[in-house]
Length: 331
Length: 245
Image (cartoon, each protein chain N blue to C red):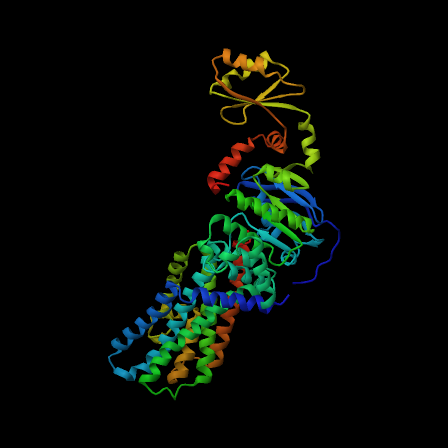
């Protein structure tokens, strides 16, 4: 691999990145910068271009247009020149089913030129760190989903990369494994690893990320820190009312009766009420009941990043998360 | 970056993991042995026919062994996405693909010596020009592997790789002078014979075993070398085009 010059100090810099698959414009002129040591979240609905962007950043896909620099190295001119700097945890485990957990990690370490003693020690260290030491000699094919995910993350960091790409690291795994994986990601972040994270779990992004970019239909619609993103919705007053079906027909009547309030239906059986000031729930419930709608619960919601996400993407994050879980198994 | 560590470990993993996979055993070992038996019985001239049949059997063993191996090591890994892990490693694509193909080359070369070892028990092989035979075996293994690689890269399922390989492998048995002399083929098939790499490999093997070669050894080996380079470059181009979308 030829030497390449560093020309700036961003860990990742992307300008005008575009990729089309036939009729579908998967990524349409994306621009962003990730600073060294930053944990950068990349959020968007299914098919919004997250994985395609990661594939282009990691050299698994060739952009149609745009520029990518990783640690200042031009990845368009020298697509494989940054491979030693990056670690990748793909959205699906891609380790070797025939090999044991230990052999998988040793093999991945060997791909980065690590000597036998070094790679065996590193593999043991990571198996220990991810609570997989007891399964070290079992074949990867026999691992549970959570174990597979953890070993895939371990394989992604086997060579202690400066920049780590995590594509949906906790999708489809159990709560304990997800928590452990998040703790590990947080620790890597503390230790100065630059992390590029895509996830469907908004609360995960909110908990871990320094900054977040929202991508919708291949375009970045907003990039900012969590605090700045959440600020406009933090001042909102929000109430979720759970009720029987049929309220969709009432939305017009509700808006007319309560002009100060905004009503949306993020998912079936839920009315989301927003206002700039306090919301009086009593009149609302009475109105709905008068219309023959049964109200089960009304509760105040503390606005979060999820609200920003819903607002920006125009989709119910909860619905998307459920869809994703149906595909990837329970979390 | 110590490239040799990555190279050696890719080769070792493929050898450990894939050498005894069912497609390799059936197509790489059982099938050539069945062909050996068939031609030996069909020739009807007893042990005396072995030197004439041996070059063809050796070439078939290499061809089927290497191409079967590639269908597993490359197509299977592409299908289950573990090949992505190799593409993400800091290795030049050329080194990566040489590492992936080395296991098949060694498997093909080892396959070649199975019928040789069997023949050694039955006839005197002291007349064989081993100095030509061994390099020919190696070059046939390389060219067959790269032919297999070209096919493995062009498809997405293991069964497709095996089926597509047969599309090339079976005609080559008849067209490349393995068991039937090329000059006995219909005129319109002869140009096709000389467009296939195995023709040159079989010619060297015939020359090395019983002196019945048509072209000079140097020409045969040079053409084989050219095929090796051409097919390898074609495979690399195809990987970049098809796999790095």
